[in-house]
Length: 163
Image (cartoon, rainbow, N blue to C red; front, side, top):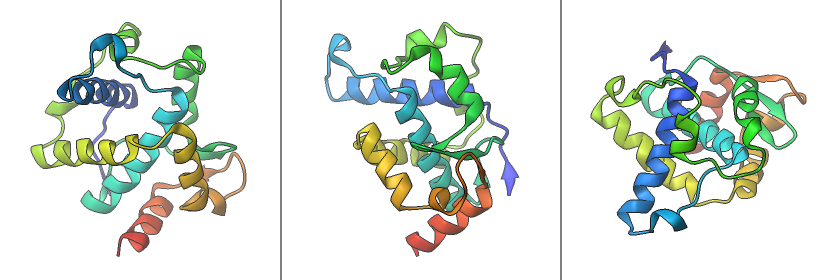
């Protein structure tokens, strides 16, 4: 599987921006918009990565997930986001943490459209509904706690349930 070499932090910024853009498109005032928690970001990235693997036969980024208590987690991302605790994370707030690259130049129109559609499909669930989905469906339950969930296991599982 080819790696597009996306930076995970750049991808988080993309998700936060997509979240705010979608809320803006449906006329939610800026002060009423909802951010994304660390937990929800982790689960969204898991389901987006799995879907992308199946659809395009390549991974978005190189980091693997581990099977943590609340589902699949990328440990390095968890440590970056843990300073936000359980609070919602917003685009502008996260952007202050570093110099990020716009990933839209690294992906084609079809891939970007797919990412947005997949984000919309899974973002409608609460953080804990996504945790439940990750526990019921997928390789999380097939590995020991804190063990790695490989991209190949994700792709195989999600390919099988989509066919």
